[in-house]
Amino acid sequence: MKNYKLEEVLEKVADSFLGSLTGNNLEVVSHFDTDGITSAAIMTRALKRLDKKFSLRIVKSLNKEIIESLDKKKVVLFMDLASGSLKEIKKSGIKKVFIIDHHEIDSENIPENVEIINPELTKKEKISSAGLTYLFCKKIDERNKDSAKLAILGMVGDTLEKEIDRLNNSILDDGNILRKRGLLIYPSTRPLNRVLEFSSNPFIPGVTGNMEGVIDLLRESGIAPEKGKYKNLIDLTEEEMKNLVTSIVLKTPGKKDKDLIGDLFLVNFFGKLEDAREISAKINACSREGKPEIALGFCLENFNSKKKAESIHTKYRQELVLGIKRVNEQKKVVGKGYVIINTKDKVKDTMIGTISSILANSKTYENGTAIIGMSYDGQNKIKVSGRNVGKTGRNLREMLSNVMESFEGEVGGHHSAAGCMIGLEDEEEFIEKVKNQFELEVIKIANLSSN
Ligand SMILES: [Mn+2]
Image (cartoon, rainbow, N blue to C red; front, top):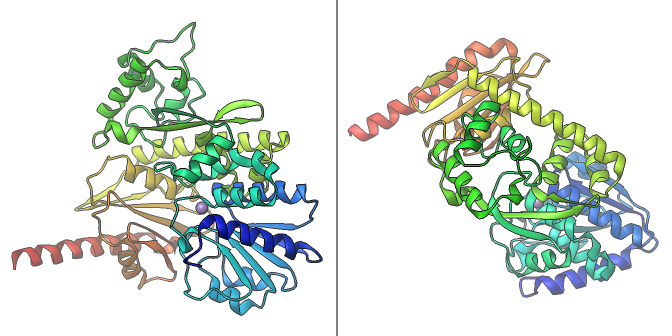
């Protein structure tokens, strides 16, 4: 398919997909993050329009067990996943498979029963799965243009908005999406004091989770409340926006103006202009809490789902900010090039990965520092999340694998973000082994440089 253009592939596969729907049952399998959920929402609307019944599964990741559990007689459509599972799909014996995805492809040979839309096979266009699903559904029926905003949510969810090309621009136009340059703190549609207090990305030391710090920062930026209420970010004047950026840069060493400024996207959602990043965060929170069906209903603008999604998100945000606060207060093991933060039962195990990432991005520690976060899972296990500050750190997957040779359990992840689970009884020994592992590395490096 290398010689095809994405446009042609979309057309060809859409025709074939429509043809295969007659007389066959359809199963849709999509990924559980914002991009996957919005892809599923776009497809759900399109299939409804076709009056086609189908079943839908949202999964955290695709594995052999899931592929084998699928009904072989059905047509299966995978979205935002499966490009790395072509070999297993080939073995599965599923009659007909369609894939709409943008992840890397694991095989040179596309199995005969598989039709795939993936920019890796064309010009490597930077586009989300939701964007692809949107263009695909527009080929099926031009009226599916009304899903453009969902495609933009997928793009923002996968942080692909930095280089918007022709394709994504056309989707922005289709959806009448408002785009504005400004500070990348969301939601831009709510009063600034609240937004800054809950800002975890960027994490602003002394401001995030600290109401007084927020008020001080706003005062320094020359932004005063009017009738007791602070402005929304999108309503700031150019001058106010500039001052605010400067004040934040001063508080976050290592960050520059350009890291904090970018495009804000405002979409009409439930009849109101909302910040795309905020909607995306709500979708993600639902999925992380194991409620992808609420996320989907929310995307389909179901009012009941909206209420549920909002309460899940509020709880999630509060837990996150509280977790950050507790990590800051926590006693830490600080060594050469590493920090071990054992939060015990003070931080939820579902939060420790996110919080370690936030800390790694916050510039609290030097580039190359490894942050090892730990928290109890409430069931005799401890979740461990390793994150590197910057790109120069050591291979965390390898280091944790070395440590885990002494314990039961697998290590997942990659060079700068890796994690594992250990038994509660191994807590102290594990920490000692991690320390040894890091000290050993330091000695190795010292020896190398003295030779
Ligand atoms: Mn994606």
